[in-house]
Amino acid sequence: MTESSRNRLAFAGAPPSRTARWTLTLAAIAFIAYFGVLVASDLLRVVPLGFVPQFGPEGMTVASVEADTVAAHAGLLPGDRLVRANEQWLQAPLDWQRVRLSLDVADPLELEIARGGQPFTIRLPLAGGLSQWRTGPSRPGLLTFRLAQAITLVLALVVGFSRMSEPAARLGALLLASFATFSLVLPMRMFHFWDALPQPLRALLWFPYATSVSLGALLFIFFAVFPLRFLRPSTLVVAHGSSVQ
Figure 1: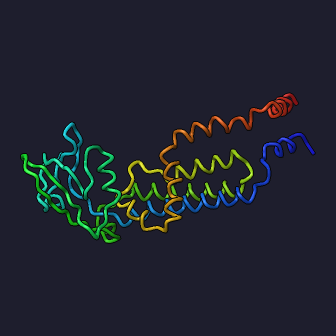
Figure 2: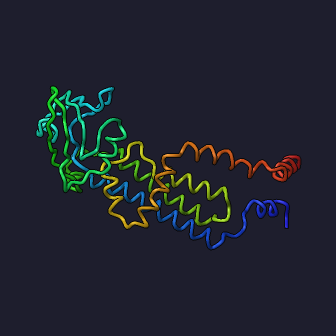
Figure 3: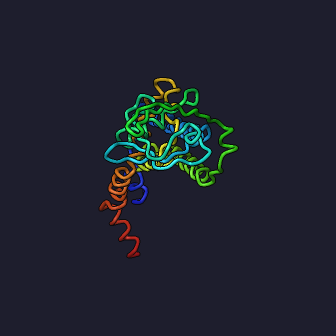
């Protein structure tokens, strides 16, 4: 056996156990399901509400309202202060994000508003589905982004299952899968589709969600660990011997 062959065997970890195989399989199912939820949220999206929110010391207010939209037809006006939405108090951007992610087209969006010191409630009817994707504004950038993510997810699965015994490969597969499920802004209705899944699968989705929002930490760990595989003394000796020859 040559020195390079011994090094390659040393770099490879022990054969994966049954527990490791099951863990990787469950992780793969979780990432595939999470990506499916993202795609479903994109394809079955809600019609744009038609107003721009802003947050300040007084909470959430309406910055602007687009003409001929759901918000305009419901009577929403710039300067209105939004107190609650579907029973959710609106004090911070995260509160509004929670409302967006849980929208259901079967129920109108109920907004409790303060205007001129007077409270009142308006309801915004919601529409969504594939028809909105076909008739709404095209999003070639989003389609390209999701296609690239799908390819990245396939690559992550190939790396993870084909090199399951190598810790660096498993970490690389996790990093690729996290890139494949990353979103700058989580799509509307995402929690609605998440909640529609069976309970065991809903619990699994928290893993890809956590890794997708922790890409910075994963990148740091990957680049801190991965080079060690190539910078061991035995590797440097072999490389030096090859260069001398």
